[in-house]
Picture 1 (cartoon, each protein chain N blue to C red):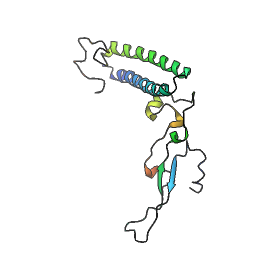
Picture 2: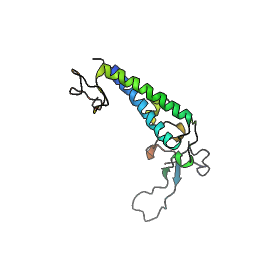
Picture 3: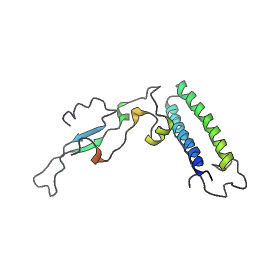
Picture 4: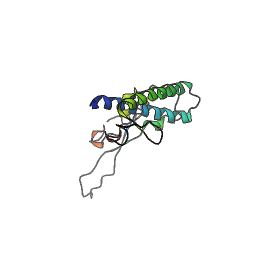
Length: 84
Length: 83
């Protein structure tokens, strides 16, 4: 099992998530900052790509319709993202 | 910490010092200097656009996207001015 690659992939997603949170808070007060807006959108697309490639390899990251589930190695099996 | 009053750059020098009163009747050994941290956002006001940013990996570790707002709340023992 290439856990190391999985961790690295998940870590990359976490990093982008954090930057997206920061940019989101920034854009709340600076809606007119087009450069930050562009960076936010670019990162959001990048995150979507990373998440879809992660989920194809290792299974769903989220539920309630935000990710595609599958069997085997769906969310019924561990480890869940927060357990790793 | 001679020139602790003249802090040239509040975004870098975030540590401030004050001197508690030491009484001859203090039961324990006196604490002559105590330090506190003033975070840089107190000096930034409305954030200007296009500030420099950390790369994503570093931003996650440091807890902020903008170096100017980075404020590591170090232990009191590690702060300058703490004797």
